[in-house]
Amino acid sequence: MAIRDTSIDPRLLESAAKHFRQNGFLGAQLSKICKDAGVTTGAVYKRYKGKEELFEAVVKNTVDSMNDILESANMVKPSELSDEELVNAWVNTEEITKVWYQRMLEMKDGLELILKCSDGTKFSHFHDEWLDKMSDIDYAYLKEMQDRGIADKTVTKLEMHVMVSAMWQLYSEPIIHGMSDEEVEHHCRVAGRLFNWAAAIGINKKYLK
Image 1: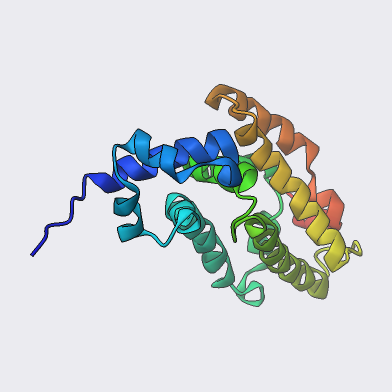
Image 2 (image 1 turned 45 degrees about the vertical axis):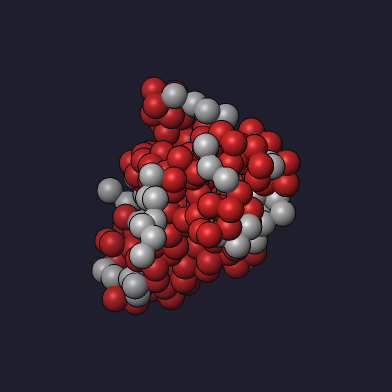
């Protein structure tokens, strides 16, 4: 029985990530990916159906992590949260921003590929679809707060989507532009001051400490 050469896989994925990042999915050439990895195209096709499946393998951990975020968020039912827990989900924006940046920094390489290099793959609209789902979750929180009289500003579902998308831009732009960790930390403070969810959705002052 032939023994699979497992040393090929990390070399191939590393080379693929480099070429996708430099040239985008459409511009990357499988032959050059293989040459840099020191493998034959035959070795690739034993593992993947083609270039798109190879791209999928490169971004898999990031896609899984982002889907895990959605799955975890969906497990929480706003109706089962206390008033304080609901309010805390929208305030302390700087701290929340830091948490999100940390998550995104952990996914930095894969996010860069999805955001900048995925045209021509099934992931070209992945972040848009992810944002749709996340904004639906946030809107459910808002509706629960409105039903309890905690928040009194009228915010439509479309407006919520636009605001969540704006927040996504705040989180993703530092990664796209290659900010250092120190620059990201400073950006968190700036973004925390910029985005005041309590005011945007009209949280009653009696719920704010």
